[in-house]
Length: 328
Image 1 (cartoon, rainbow, N blue to C red):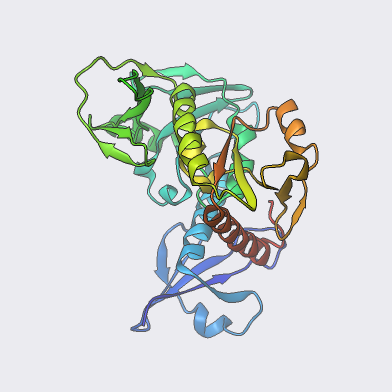
Image 2: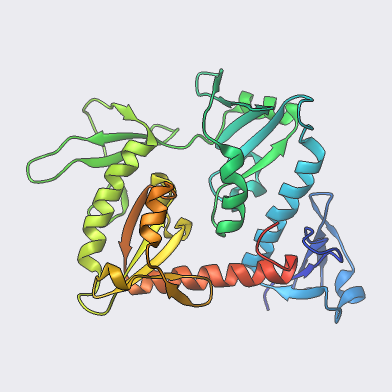
């Protein structure tokens, strides 16, 4: 037997779940609650059979635990507008928020000014609209980045020990018939290069490393990915593609914003996945470009499109069952 998981939905619509419960094969029961830790529980015995108490998967349990963490920490540490600084820890993937030490970025916000903690130990003004991306990313995908409000003491500890910094990017110059390639250096000094099979592999580079912004590096990544994926797309039937808001998101197909398809590559017959069915995507592409809603579009295979749909449908079912709708 394996561990079973349950969720206790709030009686109030659109509120975070009251608890996530795990029941071990030996009968040991624990619940993750607003205390933000696992503790002894008897909810299975007391609430089984109630509509608000239902079994979920291990993956769903992880997602809901992160929801509780985000909600409770927001209530504890977010400072009202114009009354001081709020400090957020950012995590590249939602699951990383289960461990504060996995924070990859610190952002402090005071009214309309945001500053990011840099590798040199100082704070620099940032113009990235984190408040704009946060709600969209939180609800958009089970693997989206997420931010968590933290205390000043926790921020000091993270700054002292060091963040789980994201990799720094550099671009390798063309070599013979091979076009330029993107590479990355991790915080521990190890390096990887993106292969023609879209895999990151360790390598040693003795040349000069001119680090570039993620946007430029992922632009090179996207060019490589588009070339490789175009060759994998079926020659007949539907052609599938995903749009992404940020170049860096193209590393993970589940972070795609819109799933599109068109028969035999005919754009005038384009359709968009609308959460349960395909709908006519006429003029959709022009509207997206006009409003700059995406940075890149990548062709994908039918199998990748099916996996995208499966994952997002499971995610949507969980959100609707727990919250009553997709958004908060």
